[in-house]
Structures are given as structure tokens and as C-alpha cells.
Image (cartoon, rainbow over the protein chains, first blue to last red):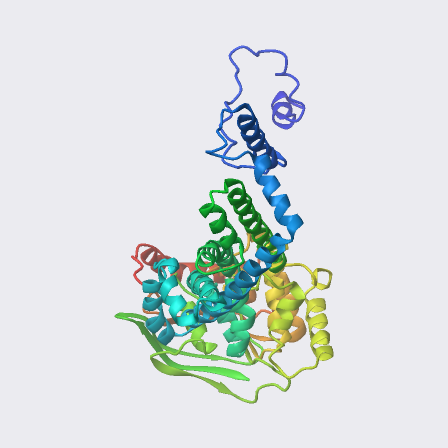
Length: 284
Length: 257
């Protein structure tokens, strides 16, 4: 074996250079990494607990005046009283009923109209300008009108939530339909699939990611509008409870009500997360 | 069943993309259509499959559709066109669901085509779990499931790396030897054309016209890489296409081809 062959073939050992001739050599500077947040468990709850603990300590030591902000323990007491007296369930069930009915109807109508706008030129030409004009109106501003149209009772509250969730769902749905891969639609046509099959098996599942992110947004809007609607002429409901607490300056009860809303939001978001994991399992 | 193209001419706006295409695809042969990019190859295939209508001319079928054919003109797409939310078997069964078949019949067909394409072990896999080559095998299985009279293949191997492409070409040759399917095979890859085509139709640059038709009378199974005769044909085709390819490369695209 000549020395030339040896040096060209014997690359795996590499032992010759190691240990000797280090001077003048330096490692390539590392420039990669970062820009990729990874989930860290328990940090979120820890931050939350730390803030509450700090707040509690501040209240007890007198740094935070009770008049300005009640201690978390007081808010918790107000919440415990709500649970014990059975009032919690009364308020919560009234609110949940309005939210579920309003959001379900709004979402169902929104998906239907969104699909129509996504599929038919006539619906797009006729309805899209209307949707664009009505979407930015704060539905709370229309609440007095809804009271006149649908009555001071449940009707106006459900209608507020319905209208509030309808528009974002329409926009999410037709955007999702627009983004469905056209080659998949052409594939369906080339195999002679019926129009119904193409809509049901190709377009609807293809638009589902967009529809579900629309649901996330509309659920939050629904909760915001729920409280606003319950501030007019509602006997029960989380919004009515907060309004009453506010007008009595019972800030501990007010905070308990706000905490209930926050928990409601978390639960709804968790439910939609489950739904996404189930319906969009194919995305991996 | 034969396929006849008569005087196909088409324009997109002011640009003429195809001009006076006359072509016959006979039963049992693979006709490859090659040409520089933007010459209207894929458009021509869309006319043949009835997904688009030409401005002038017509695409005609002659002879009976073979018995049991559910979808006589069936595409295989370049980007596979598999539904990402359906498993391999569900992607195949999708194209059977609109036909009056019982669940058991459907299941038999699905099992059969997956067996013939070597996919039986991948029935439950989702498209994202498969390599490009496997995805295209699923698409071919799906095409076979409707018992096509003519397969319309739009650059079926162009999205694959060269090694996978070799493997799939072998698969297609083996499949043709078993089933003698009819195909219209659009490609820009000359090696694929000389390997798979009984006849090779060379289109000119936009507007696409038929420049020449090269016939290769060697059995598909006997064709091998490095065959001097095939290499000669491939060189000849490249001579034909070279200047046009260069000109096409320098063109400014202003519409879809």
C-alpha cells in the first residue's frame, strides 16, 4: 500500500492529528439554536401561584389597601359562600345555558353561511360585503335593539351571543374553504365523485382546521358578550352577579365572579383543544 | 377502448397554448408526451380527462368501455392528491364510495389493489407517515381500484427523488406487463419517456404543436438503463428539445400553463 492510498483511504481513524498540532486550530463557532420555544411544565401554574402569594402577602402586610384590592383569600371566601349557598350553580347554569344555545346556533349558522360564501359565486357576491359591513359593529351596541326585538328575557341575551359568534365563524369558514387544496378537489372530480361527496369528504375536512380556530375566537367572544348581555335585565347569571357586586362595591364578590369567568374560558379552551386533537389527529 | 384527439387548440387569454393537436392512443399502449415547460402538456391531459374544455377540437372515445370499469379515464397526479385526513385504505375507498357497491365488494377491491401495489402492510397509515414513493403507490392503487380504461398520468414521478423514481418505473413496467393498461403519460423527463413509452409524442414550445412522434418497438420489460438504442433515442429527443427548452427557460411566465 502506498502512502497516497493510505492517506486517502484511512480517513476513519483520524488518530494522527488528534493530540498533536492543536495550536492554530479552533472550533467552528456555534451559531445555530434558539427561535424554538419548547413547552416547560409547571412554570405556568408556578407564576400564577407566585403572583397570588405576593398579592396575599401584600394585602396582609397592609402594602395593598383593602379598599383598593381585596386579598385573594377574601375573594376565595366569597366564592366559597357562593358554592355553599347554592347560588353558584344558579348563576352558572343560567349563564351556561345562554352561552351554549347562543354559541351553538351562531356557529352552526356561521358554518352554513361560510360554506355558501366559499362555494357559490352568487352567495359570495351577495353576502360577503354584508358580512364585512356587519362584522366590525360591536354587538353590545346593538343590545338595546335586541331587547326591543327579542324581549328583555332570554331572547335578547342569546341573540347577542349568536350574532357575536356568527360573523367570526363565517369569516373563518369561508377562508378555510378558499384554502382547501384545489388539486384535491380536481382529484375528486376526476374520479367522478358527486358534488355532495366533494363538499362533505374533501372541502369540509380540509376547512376544519380554520373552522376550529374560528371556534376558539368565537367562544371567547361569546363569553365576553354573555357578561355584557347579562348586565341588562338578568336576575341570574355570572354577569348579573358581577354587576350586582360592582354596584355594592363588594370587590371580593366581584373578583370571585371574574375568576369564575376566567375558569369558564379555560374550560372552553380546553374542550376545543380536545376537539382539535380528535378531529385533526391526521395532522400529527 | 381508444382515445382520439382531433385538432385541439386552446388559448389562455391572448396566449395560444396548444395548436392543432391530433393524436390517437390505442388500447394497451403507453403514449408519452414530452415537451419544454409551458408547452401545454398538462393542459392537454386535462382536456383528455374532461377536467377542462379546449377552445377548438374534440377528444373522442372509440369502442366500448370495458365491462366493470367504474371510471374509464383516471388520473395519477404529480403531487399524489391524497386526502391527508384519510388512511391509505380510506383514500382508496373514497373513490369507490359513490358507486353502488356493497361494503364487502368495496373491501375486496381495496384489499386487491393494495396487494397488487405492495401496500397491504400500510393499510392504516396516514399519508404524512409515508415516503413520496409510497404516496404515489397509494395514488396508483387508487387509480387501479376504479379499473380505468386509460390512465392519465401527469408527471407522476416528478416529485420523487431519482432513486425512488427508478423503483417506481420498475413497478410501472411490471404492472404494465401484468395488466397491459393504456396510458397517456406526460413528463419532462426523457429517461422516463424512453423507458415507459411505446410512442413518444414531442410537443413544441408554446403554442404546443406535435413536432414528431417517436416509436420504440422494444418490449418494456426488455428495456434497461444503458441500452445503446434507448440512449440513442434519448439523445435524439434531447437534440430536438434542447433549443426549445432554452427558449422556454428564458420566457416570462404571465399565465398558467
